[in-house]
Image (cartoon, rainbow over all chains, first blue to last red):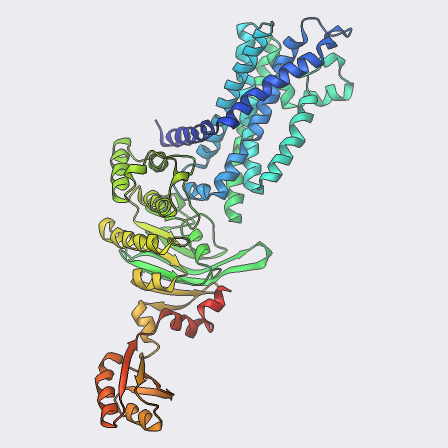
Length: 251
Length: 317
């Protein structure tokens, strides 16, 4: 195992252990997506009756949307741990060790990925229990794509945390971005029924890439979107490692 | 290589135009405890941040453990241990978890790290609390764990930024013992910052006094204090005295600046302990009874007052 891998894994373990020790937080993180799924599922149940909505149950349609939205939220909050580490002096201690900056960012992304995987399994499990079903491929895509999107968002959340060093700023940014980005995708509504301008915006919305690619097994749709998300992870990861420089200039 | 730390002309200005360092420089010999003494806001912590590669200076140059902090930060980080002013420990993890993570960040071989963790837990009396979450530790225990983290990888140079701030007197005394043993047991060079005069006096073999981002005086604590030329003699007399007593006392060699106030006679002497028998004999010859006599060395407080032009308490305010 290389030093960088070892640093990344031990930092990930630290983050997961400290999450595990906050049972209330774990419970809320896991229960909230179920509420979204069942609440939206019941509220908009009859949407599928609109002419042009191609059949099936709304719950089945909604599940990938809730999976992706939940991934956005939990990845968005990821930077909070970093702000806490800064306030407690832990980050400064890490930064004067020979730790690779990429390991600090990588650990945050892996931490987000584990949370998203567990969340997704629970959401999909509840969807199955509520009477809808997915193919194995669909389940795998619902696990992989939100993790990629979440990795990118977690890296951005870390970058923002390093630059602002303020919980309020991060909370504001997450609230400002997550719901609009979800509604500017096909997460809740079929693409052909969205206003044209939203369809146009959605094409460039990474949230929509993740949602759209989980609803199909057509690799000409899935392949490129998966690749774009992977590139996005790398770009955001790079931005976050650069943000350490800004932070170190300011302390 | 002679010095463990060399800093030269360090300048650092923060946004909003606060000039934290203004051409600060000093050298630290290997294997010694060097104290940076100054009031809060003097620039001590900024100096530590620059020397430990946490942040960069605007101007100047610093070499730590033989490596330039800007050109070879990774090498410097490998060679140093840092105990910051803020606790760097993770309160939501156990003592063992904190130490293990530190070992992993430095890339210590797992077997070696395991042995070192046990050794440090024993050494700092934390073995019983090792599997408890750190947030349940007392302030003194947390500080010890902080130091253990700082020396986990056996650094060449250890930075202790205000190591006893916020500790009660008992925990502080314990910490002082630990720091003294550290230099002996680990052979590590220590840079200590403090705003406690007593702490600098007790621990540091070399001292630099920092004020407003500059070094205003440097030397051993004794050298700095002897710059004030002499000790203070304080003699309590049995009766009210007058000019006769002053004349009698200043007849002794090396005694000057004598003054009397009621029954208290003050004077300065080059070497107080030597002057005292002569002074007492002279007073007796004049028939002036003496109740008590004390000799006190000038304190670092006096040194600070002389170089910074204000007392330590004033600067802290």
